[in-house]
Image 1 (tube, rainbow, N blue to C red):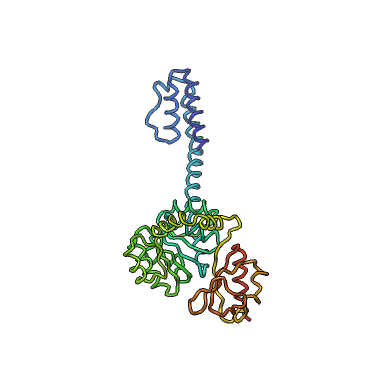
Image 2 (cartoon, rainbow, N blue to C red):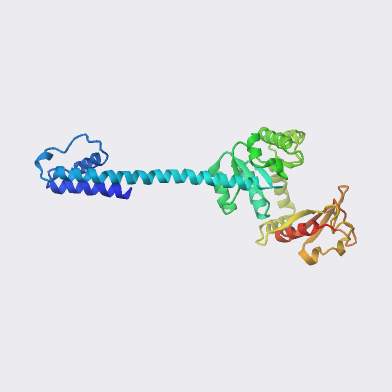
Length: 331
């Protein structure tokens, strides 16, 4: 484009110099333009009387063919490369999604979905986002995931979008759309496509909670209800709130996490004090959920762990990942 502009301006200057100012520079530029583009509406006034004017026109026409062809080639290449690059990027992303197993599908990248993305990314949990607004998803990807967020551009209430996000092999689904009816549709579709997934749905109106559960949601979360409780808690127990805030914002990424003990694990049948949890991971065991669903808070060191129970631990994310690998080892 710069070469084409230079040719137009230089050609205009050439006509102006040859004509000794008898034509205005704008007329000269116009003459150059119609010559380069081969439009040829007409010559400058009295052009035949100026020596060398037509010779210059012939030179510009001959030279201009190459310049215009070069410029068109560059523009075409940019368009093709851009389209090809985007198609290649989408294909690579879809390949990465297809390779996932046990990930989380997030339906909706709005205000709620954004916070879900932030938490899952900080805990190194694989996930795929579904949303209609690609520009918004790209911003979230850049802001929270170093530009590496996997997503599907589409309507989360459509089965095809859920399938493209790998819902059939996902471990969990988050329905975080802005309308309760849409979240019901997502829940119904996700449950039919993956009967074993843990589905957590956002609910706006309290009456919709029962419908979400009937639709197949494992759990229902009301942002307004949680917000109200948080406000009350801030008034009644500010130090507890500050503790949790600092823990979740800690640069070491401290978290409260759960670690399930599978049957046949090396931890199955061991007393808590005999496990290498503290030595190997430095995690603090806050509670144990037993097979019958009861919680044992501040468990006694002599408590015997069994397959199917769940440890509630506090510590760094990397340590939690390590513990999950340890408990997965068969005895």
